[in-house]
Image 1: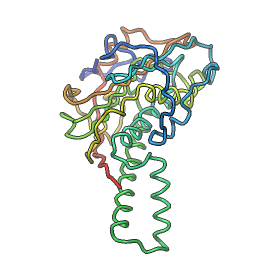
Image 2: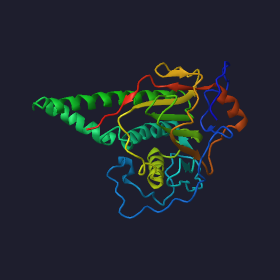
Image 3: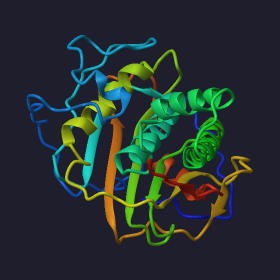
Image 4: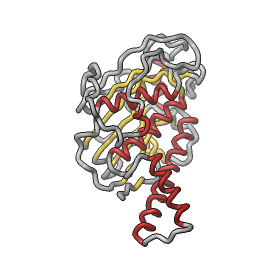
Length: 307
């Protein structure tokens, strides 16, 4: 359920550590969760995010900064469906939630052909090309491609930095990555739903690397990008929800924004389960708190490019 814009300030904000970002009836899934199918033999992984190099999750208990151990539960993913459900066996830190959003943005841009290489590789090659350019004269076409690459990376790095600021100021229950068209009518929409996450301190939460492996392993098993047609170079808009009084000055508030219903949509719903060692707010309290959460839009449109 999208937070409704209100004129009053809620006394429960900012929420305390251990608060569960869950509004009743807010997570919509178009496919029922099912057991994850086995990874087909010989699946290529070169075109995937570097985070997918560890495809198999360890059988050991999840890494945790502290607190009680929790009961793991298998995430539900269905290949070819428009939703992926990932359940973490414990609380998750706000820093981890920020990493989810940033890494998903980079992953989507590469998988949907807006970046010719995974983000980390692109940064490496562009920096090396810039260093070589000081000593070797390049053809005009290569020089233009290098400048275009640097421009795209600079804009993307700016968005990633401001996402970190936003997550440090407020809980972020939902993030939208909109490809093509505009914010009201995109060609493709990718939603990261964090409303079911129980947010805890770094000491009481699961380790970020463990959570990242679990998230991208679920995306790898779901195989949500393999059957999509190649997308031409389009613009990408990033939107996210936050508290209206969080104090952010870079993202632009969109009080009347409604999530588009047309176009291809993939929802990635994250939640916490197990024996949480910290107290969570009651649904009644969170229902009231969501009234002061609104949509914010990044003031820049990320332009993709091909080699």
